[in-house]
Length: 153
Figure (tube, rainbow, N blue to C red):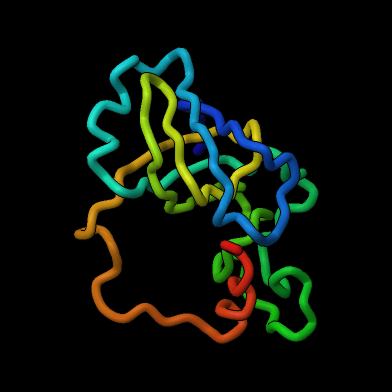
């Protein structure tokens, strides 16, 4: 089966490289594609956050991981499957981030904390609703907590 997706927009920001940390202060604009209606974002500003699904377009197919690896190649952390981490070298190169909404004007959505570089194709935007957040306790291994310590800055 082959799936074909068309970007609904593109990221505009000052980050040109996919760096590992300090994404929390990054302000981005998601500029909707010409194919999207002028009112596609209507009502989005009533929400505090959005989930942004995007394509890691800067990852070379040859660097895609389909098995296990050490996150950030850190020898202190265990080798875990690519599906048990959030690295960019994923099989379909999809990223998903929850970002805070700053403003919406026409076909431009300004957000903070989107960990996507300038020019990144956006595949979907969804408002964050409490009812879709995890029900119950969220747990994670110690290496994940350590990895994320400086991620948002």
